[in-house]
Length: 152
Image 1: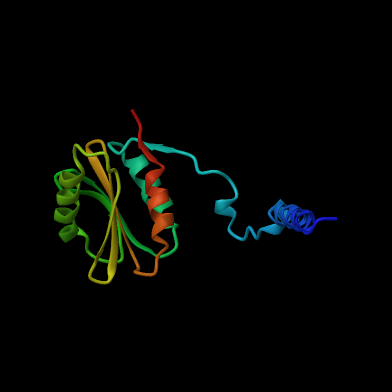
Image 2: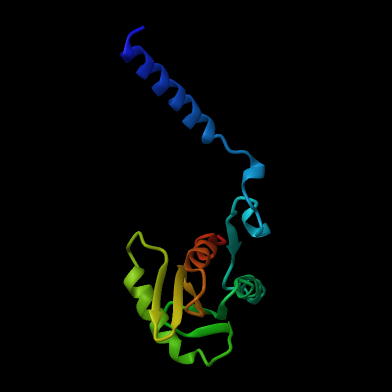
């Protein structure tokens, strides 16, 4: 037998072993967070309606680390909010963000202002702003905001 043939057989056996190592099943993963078990779905809101504003604020307020949620008009006027702090001063930040995002393909913005994470999502004539602790899972928060759609 040629030495090259043995090397090829060993390489082939290693390739087979490596392929077997990459076969995962459901039991190989820990799924502790029930919110991540199902695929995300789009949620539609008519932000001109008070009931939809309340529903949106309640749902976003459940995300761990969120301190405040507000719905405002694109000019920065606060329509409705639930907060640990006074949000009236944040209206100008939201209005500036909406103007920045207007006409662009970007539909989400996240920034750290002082010790607070601010995320903004324009939705038609309104915008949704979320304030959160600096330790918040920003990816999850942006994912939640990305699922929001304006009801037509």
